[in-house]
Every structure is written in structure tokens, then in C-alpha cells.
Image (cartoon, rainbow, N blue to C red; front, top):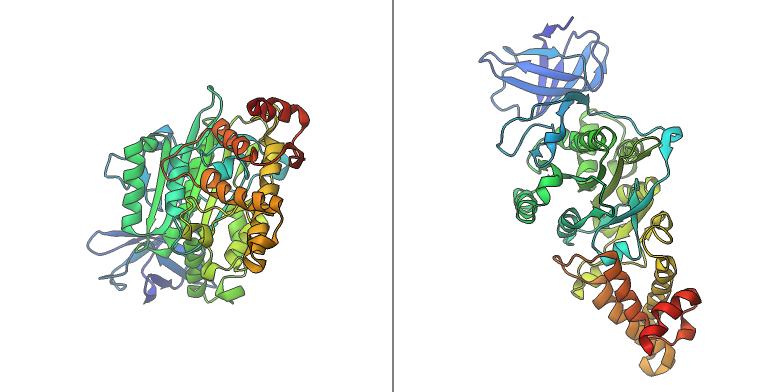
Length: 459
């Protein structure tokens, strides 16, 4: 039996303290009815004895505790889902935000889903094409993978996120593909940029957008990625779709988590973040994957800005532990005008071998990837050595490698916001660049592929 309480003892910002409660649970949804008939929504943050700490989804401005009644609903937050969620924009609570008609839900689902059972998991495989050479060619994304992007303040990660949403696709005519895009703590201008860009390019038709603005409640920011992943699970495992979830910015999510933890008066962990930050992030990231016997999959690209450009900060540090690699953006490349400024030497996709090679992309992809990476690494070192010792102090071959590194950045990594490259176009650029070297330097590619793709064009 649901009871109503008129025992609000204290209000502090968006936090209410309700006395003399019974059978109230953590995370339970709350309705607060006001004397004028208005209804506010909240969530239980903490329960201690007969007291409940409730955070409102919104402001407590003009709120009168003496005439308001609190109803604990006995359930967590749920959202209504159906195939009609594609092409729509929602807020962090799963409510329609685009001004269009409400969707007619097929079912209601609790947003607090669970991580995929390891026993039921199928191994991530099969290539997802983003149209970005630095990812597709060297740090390949595969279905069911979690591949975060580590950015820095002032870097163009918002444009990179929009480009991935516009261009991403799975190869195969019979595959149904969808994007779930979740923006947390973004400014109004950023939100408008994403909406207009997706509408202009037509990407909105296959996208579910979850938008939480910077001036909206922290508690809503915490629920936004859960709403996004719940939509993704419905599309992937009930509608048999291949779903790519792009979440930006996970740093804003973690800051909201710290704010709520402080309101609950919990003992802080590293740099003031709650001690359960690792567990909380894992509860989101581990909802990606493939399930044995299901056709659909969920692939995640979480994007975060590293505070003070520090890779050892708790947010990127813990994210790196949980996920399968990372794409790291570089200030140095950004200053050179390389776009997207992806530092391929610091980046890694631990599952790339599962999405490339025989029967996946092109047979020679793995060897070409290895050769390009090795050549760029040596060229990068040669450039640094020439700065210290002078260009005349390095060998003629090292000069070729240094020249290769410059061309590699300009032609392979850099491609601009609007250029969408197929995987074949990406690999063709790689072959073209390797022609700067004599064949004897290409030791990581099998002779059968060199005979076919290297020597043939030399004649």
C-alpha cells in the first residue's frame, strides 16, 4: 500500500529530508504533490532509520514544505520504449524533449539494468566503420566493444562525436543499425549543434538522442546514460539491431556523481569522488556487448575530457581499466591543424584483431596496420632526434621515416569533419604512403600482399 507523508523536515537546495517513513528503498521514485495541484518528481538518495533523503529532479523554488505531500512509489525509474524512439529527442529522465507528440510505449522498462552476464556473453567481433581512418585503419572498432575517447578541454571532441554519429555503419545489407547518442551536462549551444547537425544530415532518423543540459539537475545527469543504455538494450536485444552508443561527456557524469555523494555525506575517495566510482562506471560500461543467441549488439564509445590533461585522473584511469582500449586526442596535433587530432601512438583498440583480416575487412589489413604503426613510430622518433641533434645527424633512411610521419599525419590521420572514408579508401591511403619506402623496409606485410598491392603499382 502506497502511503503519503506530510513530514518534510528540511529543504537544502534540491534535497528534501522526510521523517517517519516506513519501507522506503534506495533509488525509489518519489512524487511530491503541492497544495496548488503541482507535482514534482524526485528520487531517494539515502535511507537511515525512519528518515529518507530525497533529491528533486528540478528546483525547489517556491516550494512549501508545510503544505506538500510526499508519495514513495515503490519502484525505480522506468521509461516507455517502442521502435518509435528512433528519430526522437528525450531529456535525462526519458521524457520527450523535441516538442513532438509523446510516443506510445510498447512496454515500460526500469532504467537500472544489469551488466550482461559473463556466461551469456558472446565475444565482440565484426567491424564497425566510422569513416575515420585513424580509428578504422589503426584502432578498429568492433561490435560489442567499449572503446572510449579521451579528450581535453578545448579539444574538438564534440565535432568528432557528431562525425561518428553521422558516418558510422555496419557492413552488410541485411543488418539493421541504430545510434543512441547521450549528451550530459552540455551547453544549450552544444545541444543545438548536435540536433541541427543530425537533422541536416539525416542521421536523426536512425538516432535516439538523450540530452541533459548543464543547467539541469545533477540527478538527471546521472540517470541520462542509464536511459540511453535502456533504449539501446531494447533496440539491440528485442529488435535485433546493431546499436552504437555514443556518450559525452563522462566527466560531467562523474562530477554529478560526486555532487550527489557529497549531499549524502559519504566519505570521499580519490580527489573527492565517491569510493564506488569504479563500480558505478562499470555498471554502465558493462551493459555493452553481445549475448549468445541474440542477433543484436551494443557497442559503446564513451567520451570524456581529462581534467588538467591528466591520464592518471580517476575518471580516465578507471575508464581505461574497464574498457577495451582508448582513443586519445593530442593537443600537439590539434595545434598543427590535424583534424581529428587522434594520437595513434598513444591510442589502442585491444579487440581490433577480432574485426579485421580474413573474412572481416581485407586480408592484408592486419599487416598493413602493423607496418603503418611501426613506420609512424620510427618517424616520430626520428623527428624528435633531428630536433635535438640536427637534421644532418640522422641517417638518410631516418629522414625518409621523418618525412613519412609528416605525410602520414596530413594524409591519413587528418581528413576534416565532412570526409567519410570507406575502409578500402583508408587502406589505399596506407598503401600509397608506404611507397615512400623500399620494399626491404616493409617487413610486417606478407610477400603475397606486397606482390599484389605494392609491386604492381611500381611497374
